[in-house]
Length: 58
Image 1 (cartoon, rainbow, N blue to C red):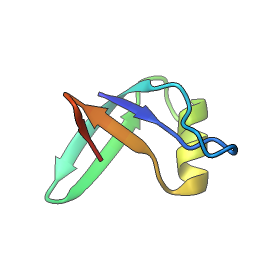
Image 2 (spheres, helix red, strand yellow):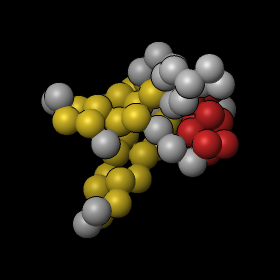
Image 3 (cartoon, rainbow, N blue to C red):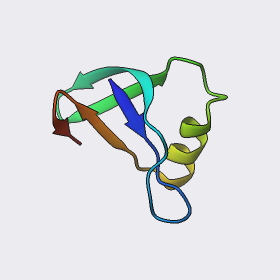
Image 4 (cartoon, rainbow, N blue to C red):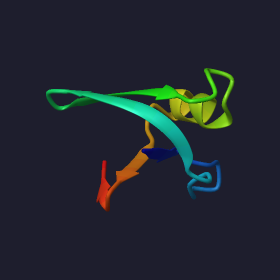
């Protein structure tokens, strides 16, 4: 699965590979490259992200 975090200009960063677990209506993600990844910092700062898998977006 891939995730993109919001950029300061309102666009999205380049998608990055992640691991995902869904529990009920919640999605938990883990960075393939650990918490030092740029997308991880951007997503934590904004508390949002764009997740897409198989044409479905969250």
